[in-house]
Length: 145
Image 1 (cartoon, rainbow, N blue to C red):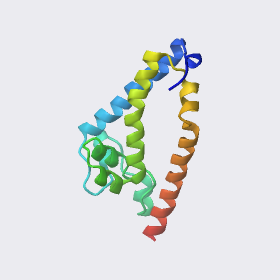
Image 2: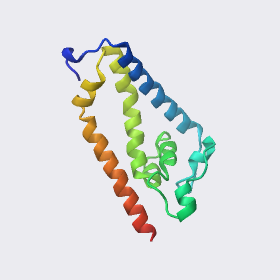
Image 3: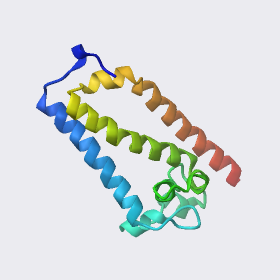
Image 4: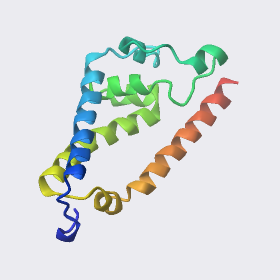
């Protein structure tokens, strides 16, 4: 992981890492608390959120449809169902799972945020995930026609 030169003593960075760890744990806890909707989408309504506006208006699923369902399946170890609900959701679930221990290690070892982003090439990974989201949206729209 990051070298000794990459160590950070910044309280603000440790707070950022703490927020990432707590946020990730909160997302995983919420995913465990809700029941995945067998339709593959709509699970988020159990959190008090409205149905997908795009799906309601157009009848086509948006790239985000099934994300919460994928997390709910993922936290239960049902990888196939998670990927079926939303392939990008399974990838994001795995990213959240990885973020928690990385954040905790960063707090304990004093890693700077920039050094971890650079070391793990997170900027490239973020672009790849965003690109996958765009492709998923196009594929979903095209297959619904």
